[in-house]
Image 1 (spheres, protein in one colour):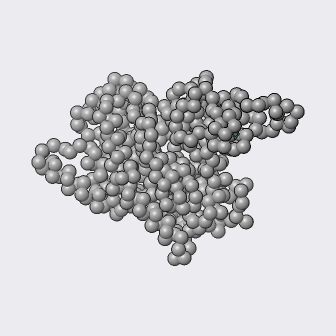
Image 2 (spheres, rainbow, N blue to C red):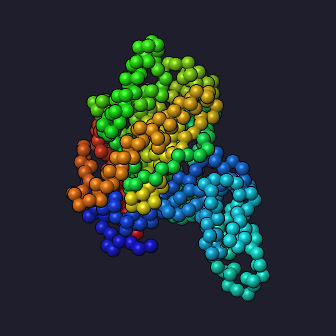
Length: 437
Ligand code: FES
Ligand SMILES: [Fe+2]
């Protein structure tokens, strides 16, 4: 893989500004694949997607096509979706069940669910050849490492490096908060997702997730329209409108309030944002759910779980998770100017159905490609990438509150919710990884 000659990270990233080529340059993008996506832990999928032996889902690590598959013994493997004979891609569908083996559609080689060869047509032809010393004889190539946390599976193409839990550090709260909110302590994925190809660099998406300044500007029209309807409904019925209206009207939150929310920059580029929406109204659905939680966990532990106030966790470089609303978006870079996002949501096992409907409402109203919220974000991403591809200015500014956010043991907290600390934190990890090797 070609690398830019004499890669000098210090010429591109300073503590408070970043050169625009980090978003637009294909050589830098190729280095990102090798140094970031092939070195860290990348999200593959959730165990509930592959419950039976032979169940598989496709997922990418960088541009590498991988399969997450449940083996005959129940163990989960991550394999390249590539036939080791002549390179044919093995599975064509995003998800499915391959039966007891994978079979290549070209010459019919078959593989066990752990990737090892099961059978080769005309195998005698390999006698007295060097085939059995060749890598093809080992079968489908596995990812170097596979691990999961609470059912969320990750893989790494690097044999060396921190284990998954060490890598996640405090970002594991994304999965703890989501799973703990289930009375049974587990979540289950809702099959299939929305997939969007964004015409912009992958980092623009991640930077937007904890950009607390943009909602009251970008989403102002959506927020005000929803707030108006909310008020009319309340005037007519005398009751609080369903929570789904609040998901949109919350975009009217003024900057003075955003300033008060805390963001945290964790080691390895992970970031989190404190919750800004109330998710515990006193409506019958919420009260019923909270009662079920108390039954399962006891009053004290249930209260502890329900009091966690976390809106968003970024698991760098591949995930944006909103645990309290059971949302997860996976980021799959395609090129410097193209990014695939997969938008998933989950069901809390053991929770009453209306709580699932709440997650579904948020999924449709805020995160889906057709919502007014996401459409405005996508338009910004595209315009941002277009602007960064011009000759107007060399640097992107991340100066807001630079040098002011308190830091302890590598974890930064924001001095104000509007600080651009999360972006600077991601670039800290980016610079470290890109400079290595
Ligand atoms: S390429 Fe797969 S069997 Fe030949
Ligand atoms: Fe947004």
